Amino acid sequence: MKGRRVSSTGLRITTILVTMVVGVVSVILCCCIFLFLDRYRSAMVQSAQTSSAQAVSQVSNTVDNYLSDMEQAMRLVEQSMTESADARDRLLNAFLTFRPDVVAVTGYSAGGALLDCWCLEGEPRADIGQNLSFDQQQASGASGAYLSAPHVESIFEGYYPWVVTMTAPLPAGGETAWVSLDLSFASISSYINNVGIGQRGYCFLMDKSGNIIYHPQQQLLYAGLKSEDTAALAALADGSHANDTVIYSLTSVGDSGWRVVGVSYVDELVNRNVAEMIRLSCLLAVVVLAAALLTSWLLSRLLGRPLRGLADAMESFETDADHFAYRPVGGTREVQELSDSFGHMVLRIQQLMSTVREEEVNLRKTELKALQAQINPHFLYNTLDSIAWMCEQGRNDDAVRMVHALARLFRISISKGHELIPIRREIEHAESYLQIQKYRYKNQFTYTFDVDPDCLDYLCNKITLQPIIENAINHGLDLLVDEGRIEVQVRPDGEDILFLVRDNGVGMSEEQIDAILHRGPADRTGIGIRNVDDRLKIYFGKRYGVRITSELDVGTCVEIRMPRVREGEYETK
Image (tube, helix red, strand yellow):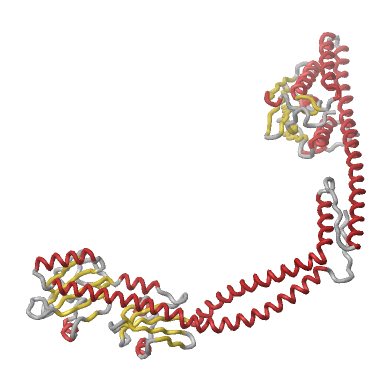
């Protein structure tokens, strides 16, 4: 069918729709731009104030709770030191059992010598030099308990935990002047490491003098790859302080003298606000899409629905004209006139298609009968020629047997006018033909049949094997010096059935094979094979037919493929 012609005058419905939708989208986008700019500016300030302050406050609370926990543990240790030696040991061992975060409890003399050590893991080294957990000068100068910076415990052999030490003086009069409590700093350091403000922001601990107590990037600091201006930070009051690139948030940790410093970057805050803008953009996009869809739907119902229905009907008719049933489309007078004209055209085209289809069926049947008629005279000529030759030689008994075989051949060939016959009858037909030819060629060849019993009840075109066998004898075995051999095999192949006819004749070249399959009716050589192939294609389709493979001086194999057909599945007359 020819394509539908579209008028080039006037505005199209799609043009009207696009114009209106673009106008609505433009107004909404203008509102969105102002809203986004205002949201972006406020988000910058809010993100700088809230995210940094919240992160630093959480770290400060965690560290403060940690230090309070150390003070409670120290009070328990101080109380245990007033007990007898046995009671003290029992209390401290129980304390260490229930407090696995306590690495060790140590006692020191007035001269700073290590007197006692209670621990669950590791054994104190015998050659303890300086214990990093205790500084006698600092202990003597402190008015009460003091807290050390995080450090590595050094009194154990092969065990070096990261600890914070709290040291407190004991009442005078006893051998032990100071007691120290070493707590694992791994939990608080792990927490600080996991705290992030943005993708690159972090927190660290320092004292009031600006000395770094713990930093998540200590290795970079020690290597000189990173630096912190702690002196300037120590002079800042608690709160948020910002410059062009960095925002610092500082909070003191109780009365410990420690301060938590949060570091965040302005450019990350911008990126964070971009994500907020994207979310707002998605929300606005939904609003815009809803408005556009609503507008388009209303306009299409008012203006384009009748024409769309007519266009859909034409498309359905193009897809399946045979089963198309047209329903007139309502709308304006012009649309109704188009609908009526299209309905008349559909009826006329369907009538013409029915007429053409009937003519094609009749032509198909006529062509099939003509092709079959070309085979029978060709076969009869060769067979009668063989009988005449035997009569001339005085072989009357053989000639009689050949006549009987010929009668069976024609009885099967006629098959009451049916084109399709059971495969078992086709095998009988081919075997009778081979018996006749074996008389003619004086037993110069042998033949075998290998037929799958499951295939015998399926149908095939009559006189399918005989032209193939005839070609094998006349052009393959006739020129052969040694004894010839013909093998006929029938087997299933998926949903198809394969007939294979093999011979050990002189073989053919690719050019000869191509010539056999493409010869016209004027050339009688190989006309049987060509007609068999044409009949199969006419009856079952182009994927079925004859395929020849051959090798010179080795032999030829002819493969015939046809579908599995049972009685009643195909027209047989």
